[in-house]
Structures are given as C-alpha cells and as structure tokens.
Length: 357
Image (cartoon, rainbow, N blue to C red):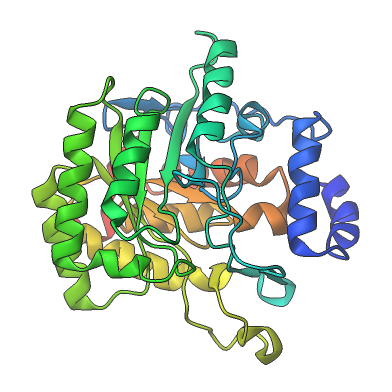
C-alpha cells in the first residue's frame, strides 16, 4: 500500500462505501490517481484463448459498472478489465444503502442488484472509447452481461447483450452468479443453463464479430451443481469460465451487526471458498476450459494459489478498496518471484500445478 493511500484511506472510510466508490471513480476519471507502470516480465506473459496478456491480473466486473473509466482503469496496471454488469434496459438497482464495508475482515457486502445505465447508453460509451482507441493501446476488454430484474425470459436479455456488444469487447461474460437478482442463480441448473448457453452461442454465431463467451458462476454451489455446470459448459462450446462471484455465506470473521445484511460477500473471507470451487471446476472440466479465478485476491500469493488451482487468469476488485491503486504492481511482482522460485518458466506452466505430477 502506498504512503499516499495509507494516509487517504481513513478519510475515505469515513464516507458511505457507495459514495466513496463514486469518489474513486471521479478521481480516476479526472486523472487525480497516479498511473502505475508494470515492468514487462517474460515469466508473467501468458496466452489465453488466443489472446496475449502481459500478465494474468485483471479487474473484475462491478468496479466500472458504466464504462466510465476504461483508460484510467488500465493505468492502474491491469492487463485486462471487465466492465459492467450491463442490463438491456436501464434500471436503478436495489434501494440504498446497498454496500457495506467490513474493514476488520477486508471484506465488502453489496446488494446493488445490477444498477445499470442500460445497453444503449453503455454502447455509446463503448463506441466513443473505440473511436479514441489507437493501435498503440491494444486494451483487452470484457463486458459483463446481466438481465433486467423484471425479465421473464432471462436468456433473451443475454442474447440482446451479445448482439449489442459483440463488436466492442474481446470477451462477453454471461453472468448468472449474482445473488442480488431474484432467481438469477437458478439459471445455473442444468436445463436452464444449457438453454441459455446454446442461445448465447447461437447469438454469437450470428453476430458481426466473434468475441469470446465466458460464463460466470457463483461459489455457492454443491458437488452436484458443479458437475452439471461443468458438463453443460463443456458441451456448449463456451470459451471460458469465471469462478466465481460473491458468496451468501457469512464466515465467523464477519461481525454480527453487518453479517445480517442481505447481499453478496467479497474480499479476503471469500478466498478459500472461491479457490476450492475453482479447483473443483478445473478437475471436472479436465483443464479443457480456461478458468478465471476471482474472489479474495489481494496478493501475489493469492494469485499464485488461484493459478496453481487451475486459473489461467485472475481478477480482483475488493483489494483496491483496502490496498489502494498500487495493488496490481505489488501482486505481479510477488507472483513473478513465486513462479521463478518454484521453477516455472511462465504462468501457463503453473496452471493447475496442484493436480499435476
């Protein structure tokens, strides 16, 4: 953590968490946050789904929900970012307060409920970004697709998302993992998931571009659900999976007064659960589908554990709240050291190492 952020954090933590997040977005938008330079290191370079990444650490969805700070987000050192989630129609999400900071556990509970500017407004921002984008800024961007709360045919909303954004991102994420939209996680069951992914892949086939299609699942799944998801994912032909989103569980580290709040828990307490589900998904898919490990990553050791458990890439969000804008640089530096220490030539060699003899 930088000295500047160490001094500023107590002041930010006096604010309501959602207001503090809005202030962070504004600071990034207006260039008030110094950029971070990540030195090129061959051991960190990796290729996933045909795309070259300078290193495996990306920004998870939820931080830049409305595509406001694409360039500033990359200036923090991420090799890729995921924007959104974005719903077809604008919606305000759940009532405030809907975000709760748990500093003692380095965690956050949120129940935003996919507050979104809607696909049309989001698309205009993507078009504006691409009009400014140059060949010297080959940014890798994903867009997290969500459904509107009132939509009955959930798959139709994802098809709309794919149709809208196929030409504007390297990957599109079919997100059925948020706990804050009623019935959304039911889409992870075998039959609705198979229908959803089949329609998603069909929409991609008929689109003007060919973005990667990822599926984002929750960490709160049992063994039977994990097997169903793995089998459906393999059969569908999707390009990758993100494991996972926030959890409804409340570990002992969460104080009782805030544990009662509805919503998904992210941050450090999520790490063990999300990594366990990641490892199981890697085993069930036999390493045939690239996985992105998300949940509780705040150090190089965390990223390394995710990679050894089967992740080809990792994402973070909550760590920015507690560690500040320099967290990416510290993570990749430690990760490079750990890879070299254990004799790996690159990230890809370490993927799933815990299951290789």
